[in-house]
Image 1 (cartoon, rainbow, N blue to C red):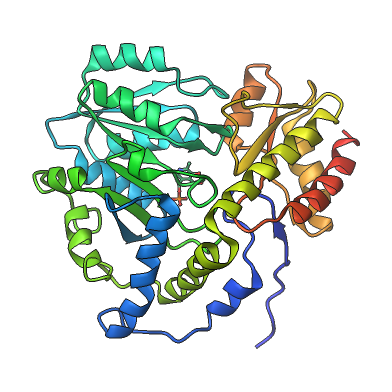
Image 2: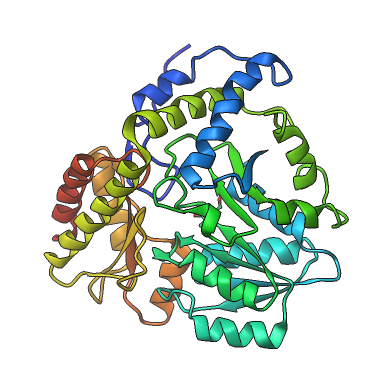
Length: 379
Ligand SMILES: Cc1ncc(COP(=O)(O)O)c(C=O)c1O
């Protein structure tokens, strides 16, 4: 068979992201049966190390949905919002809207509280909405990938709880790249995925489930099969998955989590992400006409959004800069499509993104920013 002609691009998008050779090699570890003792050798340490990375203490259990981050989010809504309840979805961008759509498309009584692109959740506005709507459940995005805005999980969960609602959190694009301290976060369920700051291929949605969520799910009807966290917890307690897992990914995940916890060190990983965010901030400071988009104090450690000078067009970013970088061996992120279309339509300046998550190193990022700068200066 002839070899496929796939370009070996270095991904500086916001996920999937760069995968180290050691993880590619781990894909060739032996296959296994998911109801055999060999399964335990993978998923036992995986579950333990994931909880360490989350700072979950003994308050949460990790379950795996075959799918991706949105599978875990959909399971959170189907398992934790009863048919007669109301869910408030709080959105600071495209992925907050997606949580709302997941709830609405599953027939849940839902309302979307939207903030403008680039804003974090405003606590006063949220509080007023909680008083008015009296929701039973509230969802929000930890790290909004379309805008690069990070929300403060513990204080938002505390506010939601003050009004008696249950907080569900989408942490898809930040988990594994920043200190979560899940144990003290207040989240009832925290959803994430493998292909972002954990630097693995996509394939599992991950849910960290609290005792409180477990108890509620037992009383919720119509959870389906793969979206039923009660069924997942039953299997997870045997270190198993509800359905046949992606065994290749499980082998890779075993190796990657062992590396993160026992070689790189969890705190070093978080520090490296902050260092890379600071690098981008300094780089943008030195670029005439460009500015950071997300407000200071709410800038993501895993991806940065950069506001372009007035007059830069979507075509210039997508066809010019992105394609020029492809020639150099990089996949550049010209900005979240719907966001830039909305920005262009309302006469606002466009935004591009730099993904710096997972196993990308400061040296790799410095090299990329150098190449990107050359192209941006041609605009
Ligand atoms: C913040 C956020 N939430 C949810 C998703 C959806 O996750 P997935 O594509 O893994 O289903 C993404 C994907 O980019 C995301 O960035």
